[in-house]
Length: 482
Ligand code: 5AD
Ligand code: SF4
View 1: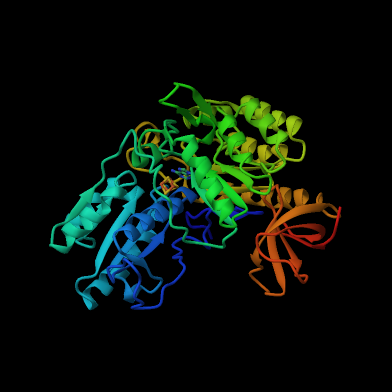
View 2 (view 1 turned 90 degrees about the vertical axis):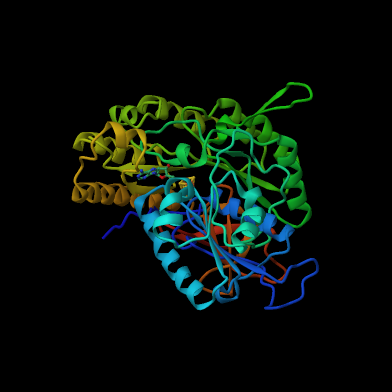
């Protein structure tokens, strides 16, 4: 019934299953002579979180500087890259299957190079290069600048590897090549790595220590995007609330609330979103800043992981149920119209039935508009793998996950029904998936709204839409004025 993929209920913005492994681009026709190009093409597939997708845009920019051009056709690629994720076992399995496909292409077309990027690189470098001989290049998330060198070396038959993690690298000066491009919404990476040690999580090991990017480079990237017609940016980090950048010139420190304000001031028509917030770090200052600016979206992704304090302690989340509830109360007090979403793990080590029930009740109490729900998957090297037995049987994990999913479906439907008859300002992103007679767009709360097109409207426009019907995942409406 379930594999270990995220189960999604409600409106989703983050990278989900439908996008996993997506290849993207403004395609250049085969063999088109591109100014400054070296005639070679790269193909890139990305798995995992939005951060990984954003990294692929940095990689694309680095490769394009040395003459490589993107292609969507595997057969046309001289360099095949896969940007990998280690978060759950399933993600790693998927990548392995893809590498087998790529190695067949390599056999058919000798000279094609295959590279593994991202979170699996550090963990599995030896395996990929030595044992399985599937790949020519293995490059960790902090080593992308080295890619051109490694590619050149690999062309000479060397195995290229760089998985060094850095305490400084933020790629602040690299202007990402926008790949999965609707021309309206874009990601901006504001920090890298993670210093939290959630016991279930592999990220601190794959992405290294937390570091924040120069706030001025973030603002200028946002301004540049606005000037190129984009109308929404999502500020990305593993834990955005601990963003902290010290200006070397005057020693002044910029925190996340201040950064949010700086980006909000770029233009009132540029919407700001951010992800992910950590319940231990989200401050009232951030909430007040959100309330002050209309263009900062009223939506917070605030993963609870578990609704039980004892489990949270074992997860090393450094907050308990009460603390989390206090933060949720603060959000609804300061920003009454805010939507909150969550990440939830079912069946973590030692989880008892009554502890699980507290997670189910949290979904209801916090009134999440949606959640990403998973069952626990032990990751080698993590604190939990070393300290706690993975002792909840798989059928129990799946049953608990199903209970959480069912509760979230009910709550999402209730949340969406409360929007019936309301009119929202929507940013049009493009045609709806099902019909080119309809547009899709999001409201501030990150809910997707589908509505019939009317003349004169185009992606990137704001429009008022009245909600006329809902499901647990989507709102349907019609153009209206408040
Ligand atoms: N097993 C299951 N889910 C996990 N997540 C992180 N690590 C694991 C794991 N080992 C989930 C968390 C996190 C989201 C990105 O993935 O809910 O917030
Ligand atoms: Fe996957 Fe985590 Fe790496 Fe993102 S940071 S790609 S979710 S392991």
